[in-house]
Length: 396
Image 1 (cartoon, helix red, strand yellow):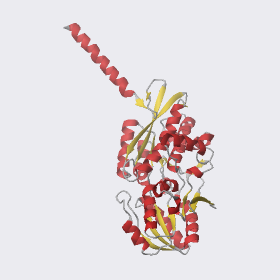
Image 2: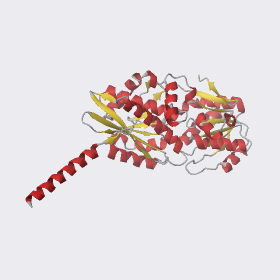
Image 3: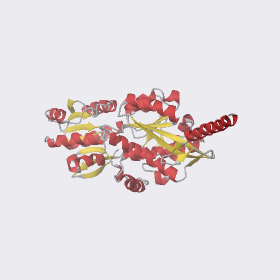
Image 4: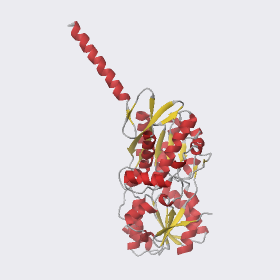
């Protein structure tokens, strides 16, 4: 009997040991196991819309993070203070809902200890900012909303350019080409409301008039016939539209089908090249002014990025993927400079080093500096669609 109990005790101890080893392993971005003593794993969090009407938008932002992580891992990882690390991207679906984003971030911190969490909508950023400084993680904020870095949060990086820089060039183009009457049909999110509140006074200062002012909840609405019809009854020269690219394109398409022949101001969240996948042609978008598509950019890292992204996803990348790809590399370079992979405050303090040390072939965008509030200072790239083609618009 005693020998039997000794044998069972040994088996039980072995099971506990194996279980402990198994639970300490983590999956890296390219599917490999990590967890050896001489190699660490940095978990990068993501919460964004991976289902529902904004799912394609969420997937594209996530693809940029994942692609950068996979490249870094395939190159052998990265070294911080003498130790090698690989990246593990942990993504959760928040359905484009701020409360879900907040819950996801809590879970990411509790289960994965993520020093950085990416999120691609201003509502999600606001939800995370309630507790990110207390729980100590950096928000990789893919939103052009200026307020997210103006509110004093010390652990937020705004990745895209602020949207208020687009107000003047968009207005000058649309008003000059089509006229002074505009109908507002932006996304119903807080970001859409803030955009509208910036655009309306400037439009009116230039002698224009807002003849219809409403918004569209893309999380709930999929057919825009009624609201577009109501807007067109006011005979606008220009429609102000925007939100995720796919539903925004449907709004533009329905407007054309209902006989609208004017121009479009397209919020910076929606991208022409992504909208074209819905409309099948740029002709539907003639007269639109918006953000220059990434594939038309002359930044040094673009050709290689476009090639690799196309090979992986069988589609050209947009700025959702490009900017989050760039930001992931910037965060890793900041970790190297800070000498830590898990201290968000030190990493944040070295974000300028992250930009300074960015490899030339990863410069999908030219972003030389980060401002004191945590916003990337990127050059605005504006384009219009004329005769079915992308035309660059010079920004003074």
